[in-house]
Length: 291
Image 1 (cartoon, one colour):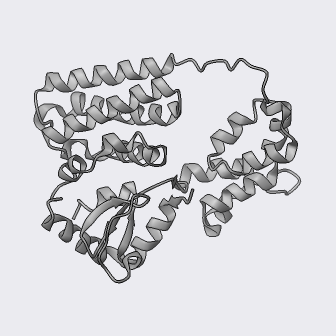
Image 2 (cartoon, one colour; image 1 turned 90 degrees about the vertical axis):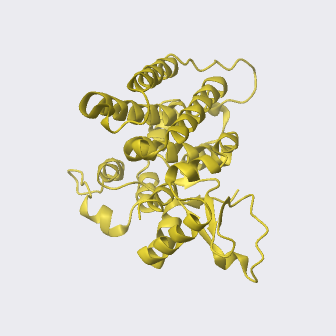
Image 3 (cartoon, one colour; image 1 turned 90 degrees about the horizontal axis):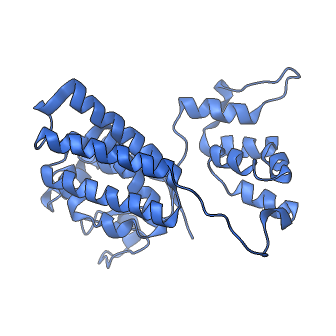
């Protein structure tokens, strides 16, 4: 499955510049996407979360909205936002997949709601303040449910990680793009522990997520003068946003003036459709409505 990363999206948008973003925004406005809330309502994110390729993208978008754009949503869009979030939580509780991802989203959302209710109040909130108090209580209840989530023990006599050869285990580690996942997997078996401490693995992870001029500024050396790539990675993570990957992303067609999921495509009538497609990361999706 081909992956489309945020870094690729950022590169294309930065190359086009703010003028291209502004032009895209103007086109979206002419086709009914005047506000973030309207765009959020028109795109079927409820269906998107059922697709494993789009799940992370939608969660990241909801997290960005929770951090800074929650009060910009209309009452209808806010209701839609929390309905989708409820479906995401129920899906995670049922499938028992991606709990850490959702915990991060709920943590940011809970913090935002606390600030709005305690420090700002109803002056910036759409709707009755009691509704927002209820929403905060719901978020806290979701957090408790996820905290109590117990992963089932696999019972059977099939192959386990311990049965796999070292080169296969090493290949698995090299396919992980999150350093925290590598650390967690390294705690499973002694063999994985050894492989997860490989300097070359962490060097590759630093080179994948960060530009050379970035990690050169934050290199951590051992007493013997060797680069400690694992410590360097986590130091860089505190300073710069890591590269993100999504199985599928929203794209904008400049010829047809519509937003669509890349893997689904759309029947573009342009002579060269690919030249009209612009990838839209979660952050750029929000940025389109800030002009």
